[in-house]
Image (cartoon, rainbow, N blue to C red):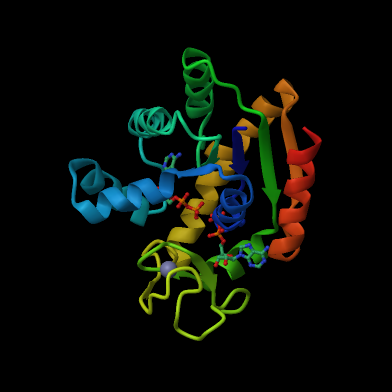
Length: 216
Ligand code: ADP
Ligand code: ADP
Ligand code: ZN
């Protein structure tokens, strides 16, 4: 089972992907996480990506497309993949289609998380994650059970993203509106787009996703 999680920055894609990984044994392929790993490693790609990411703009399609293609190949034995943060442009959506048919794979579900702009800003401004395992948290909505200790791995180190600041968020929202939202009709026309109300609590949203996945 392969699926795409679509939605604006901060909508809850990573949060829901974490749950899907646990419940269905799928592999999460987050292009944002991959790029942040490249930045951390100091690779050439990381150096190119960093400035673009900090400005809240999109990294060039060709770099992203080859990165995701490699990752899909590397996980060919997995039960399925969750694409989180990809595709984000029409060119990426078209390249994905071609890639899937070359690799003899299908995309079973394209799930859009719908949230208001106020909620996006609220979610992004409180977002942080475990520095060791990447588990996601929120200052108000999702604190670890034991203060200052990651539920998943016990680490006491956490980090915040440098692009989760008001200026970069504005620019990322603009990129979503101008470059990513236009791919929604591409999937509507194929008859595979399903929308989920992303405004509820994390478990409420997950219940809607499970229903879609079970129904397919
Ligand atoms: P969010 O979780 O807030 O949606 P991501 O972690 O997915 O953000 O992405 C962070 C940044 O990485 C983006 O603002 C962009 O610069 C870059 N990026 C991630 N995925 C892509 C993609 N598919 N195409 C172009 N740039 C991307
Ligand atoms: P995305 O991957 O789409 O950028 P995240 O999954 O990182 O979004 O979520 C952004 C922030 O909002 C995180 O701090 C997360 O804990 C929180 N969050 C995610 N989903 C919900 C929800 N349904 N209700 C409240 N907070 C949420
Ligand atoms: Zn952790």
